[in-house]
Image (cartoon, rainbow, N blue to C red; front, side):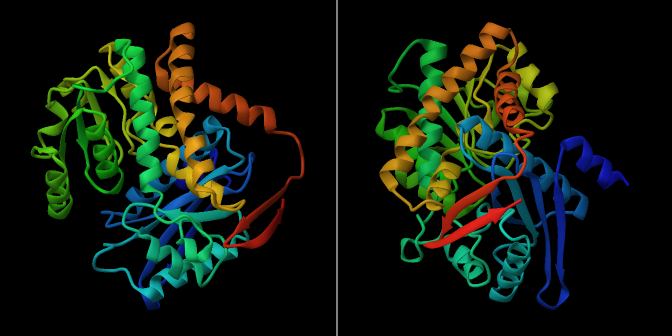
Length: 367
């Protein structure tokens, strides 16, 4: 009963528990909303400590995808999936193909993509079982790794935040502390360094740390990154990094990063940042570049078009700051309000037909 109450309180339409003991598959697919279109969201493979932890993560992530698509103006709903396991040890072709069959059984209500613990090659294995896959290589009609575009969007959001907070267009000389130097964090660091920013970063993965060091990133211990003095703190690892323990330790003027669900508790922690005078760029607005990128695959991928749309994150983030200032509310409240307004306008339109393209094949969905 607790699960049903949780789903109802968060507004989820469907949650599918996927199990195949023969290939050791344990996964959850959560479809939060299909009001604006089919739910698109990545599949994350992570060694969760419990089923309950995995369930809470997928419920929060899928809801975040709904708001991300709505706030960005995309004709998509929100969904997400998690696979319980260590991606470096437990991932097999059989497991991925079994997961693909579960995705296929939903008939397009959920379109999967790459997330933490997954690679483009994994998406192509899943593509062998279902057409409802994005983030595959150009050879399969896709766009490849979405991480560079996600990072590009975060970069645009950081520029908008610096302009709003400091009244300056340039990032030269600005100090940015990046928490997580994986795919998005590394590409973000590259762009910031090209703009003349100073970048300090951390990661729990030794390979990611070495790649960051080679770029020119100043490396610090993961436990020290939150309290590192910087103009911008950029969470680019897992979620819930902003909480009652970390927020008082922040020594920055802006929080703007690529991680999902950065606020452990949206209401409590969003207001805590605002009370400290720290400008927060809501995660589901600033990190929408990856979603924009794979969304473009559905109608025939064009890199220039994807980057042009992602550049609009600068304007979207600025609009959130303006709304927050005018309404005298924290930025996460303003962002949520704008997303919910769009969803509400589209409700009650009755039956929808979504026509998209996946992997070069025409797809029609009726609900």
